[in-house]
Each structure stands twice: as C-alpha cells, then as structure tokens.
Length: 175
Image (tube, rainbow, N blue to C red; front, side, top):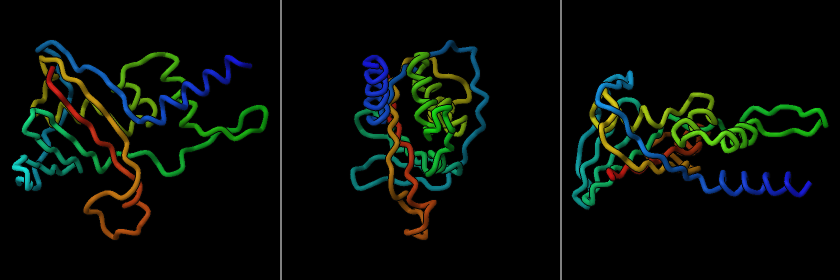
C-alpha cells in the first residue's frame, strides 16, 4: 500500500510541474515529415526581439540570449479528459493513467507529451518546424515544455470556453 501511495505521489508531483526536458538530436539524413509553416505576422516587440506568428497557431519569439520561445495556441489538453471506470467503480481520469504509464515506461519528453495528449500535441514536430528546416536538426537542443492554463492571448471572444483552455509554451536552447 505504501508503494502505491508513493508511486501516486511521485506521478502527481511530476505531472503538476508541467515541465519536461529532452534533447533533440538526429543525424543529417533523417527527415521529420514536416510541412512548411506560413508566416502570418512578423514584427519586433518592445525589447527588440523578433516575433513570428504562423498559420498553424504557433507564435515564435527569438530572444536576444539565443533562446527560442514557442507558444502553441492551437494544441492543448481538452478541458475534460475522458474518464474510465475502474473495476472498483471509482472514476479515474484517463489523463492521469496515461501520465503514469508514460512515467513508468520512461519515454522521452517529446514522446511523453505526444502520448499523454493522444497524438494531439507533437512537440518535436512543432519545434523542428519552427527551427526553419524540414529535416531534424543536426545539433543538440534543450526543450522545456510547459502547459499554461487560462486565457489564450488575442483569442476572441474573451470569455468563451475555447479562449480559456490554455496553451503550450516551449523554450528551445541550443546546447
């Protein structure tokens, strides 16, 4: 019983941080099967950082210190994940089960987010696409992903459900 409680607390603490790390590294000849993204808006913010908004709902900020911040306003968790009835008739959120399975198997952060969201959020594909190449980068990057619950900037009407579901923010740093 103590092991089960310890495992559940570990899973809970890992999943509540919302942060995962991975290295994106591949040989030059591997392809990602990504489509080219079209820039909808291109400007500089008040700090002089370049910002690009793409047609697939991803906003990319190129910070002066070399960090690339991607805000993925299109891909998010559903507000109410599906639930499964366990044999003991307790209702367990499907999302928690998938997070537990991902932690248990020790899959990478990119695969972890892809797996937990039932294939709706493909972090590695989004990042490779925004690095400006259709090939996997031939370098090491540190990817930090965080789900930010709440209002999506620029979404209208402000008080609607879809505009308040949150979004993913990724930080990409070349190592």
